[in-house]
Amino acid sequence: MEEKIDALKKVKDGVDVEAVKKAYEDLNQTVQKIGQAMYQASSAGQATSDQGQGGTAEGQASGEKKEGPVEAEYEEVKK
Image 1 (tube, helix red, strand yellow):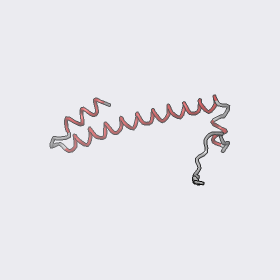
Image 2 (cartoon, rainbow, N blue to C red):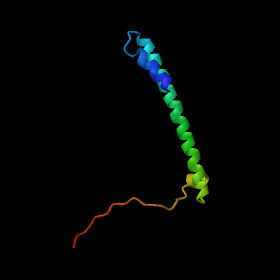
Image 3 (cartoon, rainbow, N blue to C red):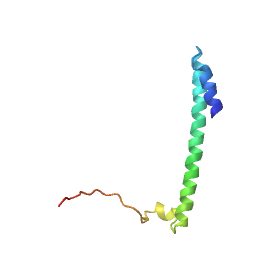
Image 4 (cartoon, rainbow, N blue to C red):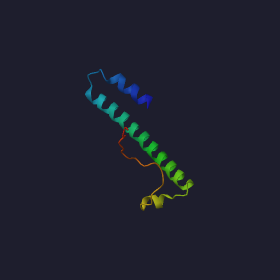
């Protein structure tokens, strides 16, 4: 990724618009690949975590609820 950033920095102030577009697209593709890999790793880690807690990925997909914190609103009443 650093190579792609350096390549973009080299051409960003130039007059060749096509070179800037190509360097930008190359960087964008690299960032997307990294994001995809991170998402897949996160998904795999989440499935492993769910199974380790007695749940299954299939159970989660079918609507089975895990117990845990519940977000709610409340109002504090002063006496």
